[in-house]
Each structure stands twice: as structure tokens, then as C-alpha cells.
Image (tube, rainbow, N blue to C red; front, side, top):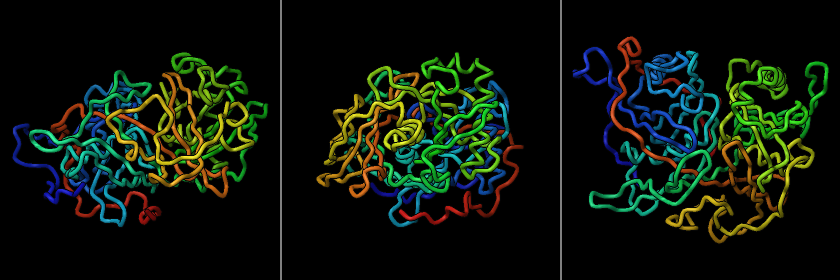
Length: 436
């Protein structure tokens, strides 16, 4: 895998056959159970305000139907990715995730998204940021939102016109129809991605007053800030459909009250306008997994569960004393040796050595396999454990899939891009120099 070195365009291109509308190069991609437009950083305005205006116009927000843009009128399909080459040691690509909402004009770049992350390396090849030179391509990707780094491997076989991204394969993930080629993702040290540490309150369990009653929660961040609460403590089974939960106004009001209170407990301040922490209702598993979940993102019940939310929920399972550990059905731990997670999502075209369980091939290490049940099925992953402290999770590995759906240019009104700023603003200055 090598950078192409080819120059990239900067700003709107003129003249165009579209009148005053501005064409912006765009690759529309599915990543895991999410989808949205991907952009090269050099194709967008440098300043955040102008960049956000372009993203809002491209998605069609604010409008509940997003009728004038590419958005799908749902938080899972109102996302965008921005990717650039990296000049940091040990990092190949830098990824900025943007969460938009159908009915608001906010562009939130503080959370991350493990599903959209699955499309980053395929996008980099498709857009010319990377040139594959082997049957598999592995890149280290820094998520700028949180400073976390992941190693991502995709299949790039050689065809008549050179190497290409293989999207066809035998990997099945719940929440996506059919099968596709595996995208293997190994997360490295995701503790405290947004909060101050894995357990930002310093406790495995906290008690919060809610409508005159006391509710136990676990506040945890191993890639995504979560508030884990037993569904039974809110008078629910944890097996309800998303449709039923989304229509349950009384429950949603209580969940939001709890979220706001826990935001302060977690050191996040007022989270009323933020997409995190995510609320995760947990219950004993019903389909042979480890834990049943219903995840809110943050006000709509997820049809499945986000990648990093699953990693964080799985981490809570292995920590004695947490709300999740109390209801989880944990299997025995094992010793990893470079093999893939024991999941149904396996792709025969992906060599075992390229499925990053966080342990280099041949280097053993303790692990636990966790299956997180959700409304669309289950999410299987492997947690690598610290040999000196088996209660500390040091890595996580999983398989996702991705697909290029469309490539071309998205047209935005000239009012969305009136001019080009001359300097790029740092997104999160406090995370500007993460350690690979």
C-alpha cells in the first residue's frame, strides 16, 4: 500500500455546466450498518463553518425528510466522512466523522463511528489517496474526533485494469442484507476516547435519582461514551422492538433525563445538544449471546448497535460490578494466537493473519469472545486482555463490511460555499498530537 502522490483539487472547480451550483467530488458509501457521503479533505473548504455549510447542503439538513440532499431521514443515514493522508509517524490516513441530524443544522464532530470507519480504507483506494500493491491492503487510520487509531485490512485483488477493492464476499453482518467482503478492524487502546478514562466517574456502578427512584448505571467509555442501565430498572424487558421503544414517549423522557444527569457525572457537562453519551438498555441474552441491548443514538432506538458502542458494552460485560456484568452470560476466556474472532461473520477470502484480533500472528494473549445481541441480530467481537490484569481490555477486533454505492459530485448551492478559507482550523486542538 502506497500513497498515490497525485495532486488533489482545492475548492470548487470552475467553470461547470451546472450554473452557479458547486460540484463537490463525493463517494457515497456504506460502512457497516451506516452510510453517507465521503469526501477528501482537500475537496472541502478549510474553515469549519464553511465546511459544515457544505455538509449540511449535501445531506439536505435541516429537514426531517432531507428531501433536498443525500441524507436518509434517519441518524444512521445522516452521516459523512472526511479523509486525508497523514504525515504523522505510524499513521496512514486521518478520518473525521461528521454526525448530522435530519431536522437540525448541527454538524457534530465530537463522537466517532466505527461503522463509517469500515469504509475509510475502501474510500481511500477508490478516491486515489492510497494505491494498493498487494492482495490485501492494511492501513492505520487515526480518527481525529477522538484520537483513536485502528488497523484496517481490506481485500485488493489484481484485475485486468490493476488492483481494486473487492466488495463481494461471504461475510454477513446483522443489519445489512446479503454478504460482502470482510473489512477487519483492530482497535488499539480505545479507553477514554471521549471521557477522562474508561470509567469516568471512577466507579463501576453509580446510582442516579430518577423520578423519585434510584437507578443503578454504569458510565463507561471504551471507544464510545455509554450509560448502561438495566432495562428492568426502567420497567422494560430489553427485548422490545425499536418501533415500540421509539413510540414509548414516557420511556424516552426518562432515558433523556438519565442521560443528562449522567453527562455531568461523566465530566461531559451539558450534553443536551450532543450525540453522546449513548444510552444502552441491557438484559440477559435471549439468542445464545452474551448480552441483550437496546441502544439509543441518543434519542432514537438503534436498529442494531454501533461498532464502538458494542465494544464498550462488551467491555462492561467483563468488569465485575457493572450493570452489564450482572446480567451477562459470560463464557470462558481463552488465549489468542492471531486467529479471527469466533463469529459467524467469516470470509473465506480473508487470510487469518490479516484479521487483526489485536495480537500479532504467533504472539499469544488472553482474550474473551463476546456476542452483543441487538434488535437485528448480534455483534460478535473479541476483546484482548492485559496478561498482567485480565480485567483490563487492551484491544478489540471485529469484522465489518463496506460498499461503494455511488461516485461523482454532489451539487451544493453557491450560498453553501461563498468563498474558500485560506487556513484549515484544527478540529480538536487538545487531540492534535495523539500517540500512535
